[in-house]
Length: 247
Length: 315
Image 1 (cartoon, each protein chain N blue to C red):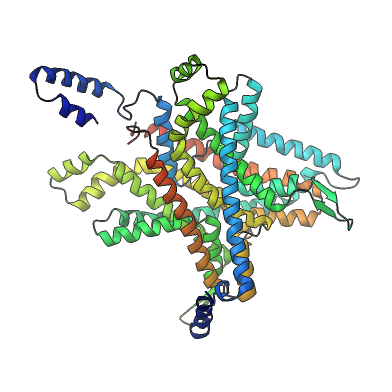
Image 2 (cartoon, one colour):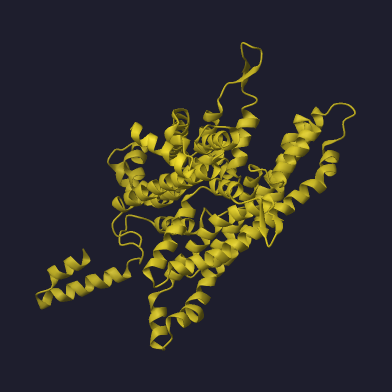
């Protein structure tokens, strides 16, 4: 392993291509941490937003008009405002209200910027997911639900065991679009100083003055990251496609 | 499966009648799906997903109600800030009025960036989209790679890329021409636009039925003639709604340039707020910015919907 790291040192000495993320242990750790942070932001937000979507779609089918209205308002707010504004709104707007006084007498935020990034990204993608799952649920005919009812399934179990599996297959192409978009949106966490990939990379290039190299690394990493997600989701989409449906 | 069933039925003459009746039943079934277990909502969702994938983002669906809510937020924020104002401080609206020329200049700057990025990106995207349907395999492959590369990269990363890697000045014939940061930002936004336009072009050309190509060929049109005189004119109708939606998305994305320090409306609003140094002004000022963007994007979103309904061909 050390030989590989050393090779990048030699590369720098001979060609001037400076990639400290390989030969410098400190920068390597920083970069890997940033990569992990981006992955963590993506994975946690994906899971949370899908959960929000499932629950939201269920609540939208509620018999209470108030519940439906609340969910609708949530969708309208997060669908129609830019995600950057949402992140600022959560971090500066709500985050500044939620703080306690620390031991030094300075205000200490109760919720960290990482948590706010995850929360706002999840809500942002979740709003789209609610609509996506809702459309999927609508596509399941009433007769299927009646059949489940006649077999003694409760409302929740009908939703979880009968409607959702069918609806999920229908929703997957749209969900795929949205999740790819979500992973790309994690870069906005840069704006509230979350140490994700873009943020640590900018730290590294301002320390080492190697902007071109780090820029290319950054672009490549995101291309691979998003490309892998697109590929995996495409395959999954094809694997669980409802046969005969769609072109 | 249907073909396998046909093969089973083939054999006796008596069974052929049944098979033809079965085929007739199939032709009566909805074209998009064979399964009666799914309602038309499924087809609609699939179509919208394909559209969003091609167009680079979910369609904007703004309604007048959104504008009313934004105005209400603005009014309430103004009221709250007014109540918080100390004695002797100018009113919120007067402060906003004072900064209005600055903010509007910033907003016009946003619009200029969006228009320039859109025109550059569209021109490059048309070329790239045309290359994607080229008959030369290598050209097609390279164009597809470039398109996917720029579609997969986050907008903010591309923006950073252009901001930091383009030179701040170029020397041409001994003359030094400075490149201001907004030019670089425009270029950075034009790259994803280019990739998305290329995808819109490709999708539109591919959505034209093959029969169009075949009938053109039977009328002795060559490939270029078919492309320019028959296929592309039909594509324009299909490309216009997603293209306009992309423009609306781009306009809202111009605020990203504030992160890299371009003096557009978000940056100027931030500067105005720090100059005033009154925390209460934060909400009314940003609500005002949202109202401005709504006023600009709402007509575009409405017009896109109208065009979409008018040009609905792929039903």
